[in-house]
Length: 73
Image (cartoon, rainbow, N blue to C red; front, side, top):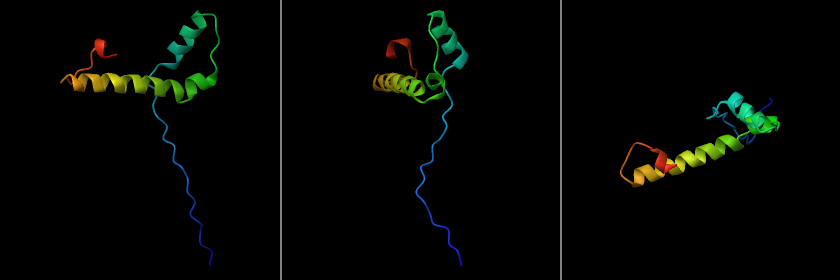
């Protein structure tokens, strides 16, 4: 009888991007530069945006608000 060996696999969730890829590419192109696919397909840019939004949310909550305002950014 063959028993399958369990392996520890890390599940990576694909997170929806919080930005419009074509607009980012267009902006970079307007500055006479090219865009590497890792910029748009990687998690780095999404992580930077998420971190910035999380800080703004924390600031709004600390000020007793549920509404994130431009000043929180």
